[in-house]
Length: 324
Image (cartoon, rainbow, N blue to C red; front, side):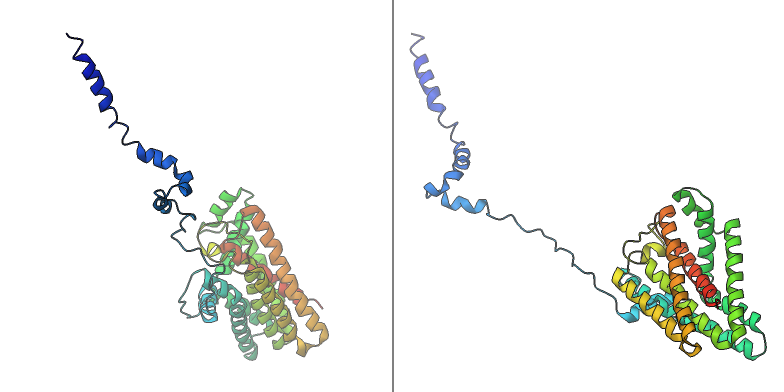
């Protein structure tokens, strides 16, 4: 008798099993998605899998960054490279691009101011040597000694012979070491001696020489800020302007500067034209050699390296101008 109730229970268990596989139809429906074209009920399930993936939510950056107006570039150049009361409104990469292209204009202004002071001293009877000293001092005053300080720091860093990190740490110190003092001494002596010789010929020779030096020295900064020259530190002036100038723009500025230096010597004769053009080329070449050495030793450029490049170009240009 006990066996008779058991069959209905066993029969009721298979009857309870059908509701268990009922939640499986969605799985079977998913498996039947590839055969969607054969069934009409599967048609509305197509929108769940779009044919194309959704677009990214962000917009891609523009191919070319916008360039700052030339007015902002001039303010950047004068506000960074001189102490003249010029208010800069922008200090971003676009302004750095235009500003480094305008760097020779700042150099021309500094050179003309130095030539004017030298001319006044000559007019007052101060002599060629005193005029030369003043002409060499005015650029230091108008830049707060920025370039001379960079020259001394770079000389200390490179002269230490230590690895790049240690050399950069030495360059960042506020004091000046023996290499910096010796370099400053000979550079300033060379500049004063060359200017004295130019002023000894006439005030015009000294004035043109001062203008050529100012323009050429800042043109070296334009070339050093070209694309492909990295910054040695992630901060500072070097990082702000490194790689901001395209190659073609830097080359155009260099050509204009060399031609302008040659044209400034037209009143002195054809030989002077060649000499002034060669002086500009030699100055830029000397700065490029120093730049190559700094990239190899330090890994890139810094604000101190820019100052060293400017003083190196200025000294080389003055030395070449004394030839003949």
